[in-house]
Length: 259
Image 1 (spheres, rainbow, N blue to C red):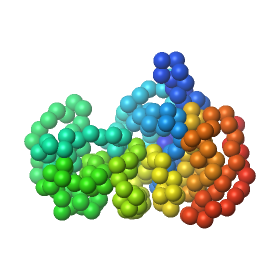
Image 2 (image 1 turned 90 degrees about the horizontal axis):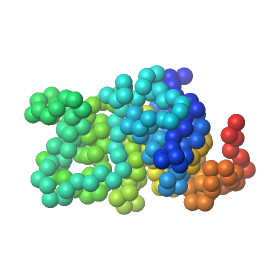
Image 3 (image 1 turned 60 degrees about the vertical axis):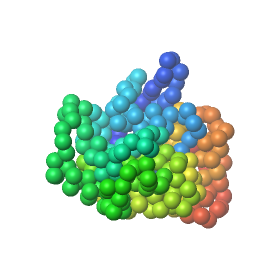
Image 4 (image 1 turned 45 degrees about the horizontal axis):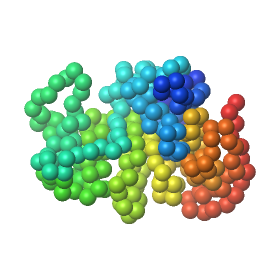
């Protein structure tokens, strides 16, 4: 059985006194590919930032690989939401990936031959090896996202977070992007935030609904309950399940259990 790499206990977090995450208890084993869904403002990005150590919980604990997130940051990759790159800035895809080697306190230094080799290997891993010298502004949305994933992979992380990575990619590109993540998942545990329910249903291994509270579904299923949570339900609502598993709709009844 795979080891537990994320363990969150009794986590609560608020902004300016307003609850964002309430009593989150959650563990994840190595090798999982989990998608987090939920309404805007439901706490998905906040939860990622807590697991990255970028935010501190009001109460509760967050342990990654059995340690504090800050202690294991070198074992984690992150592709944030809405990465803005000046399209006219003369930076290549390889230059962007090399930025993934910059760490707080390390300062800037000219990339070594080993740094460049690692960056090129990361580009090859996401099938962008032929575009290393291409200006980032000349790439398509899907190609840019692959470069950003390569930037997150350049340090060989064991855990990868992606926050809405396909927002600027067309439908065909989304399928190709998730197929890439599925391949990466053979060696890396992945957590992704996404609204692309029909696309992700064929790629992920588990689903979590986040709307202040956290509900984990250990199956690759997108359900009517989850759709309701995304658009209508409050944290206390109980919704019926309309199952869309691997493209085959059928219906079951299920209730979340907060106990």
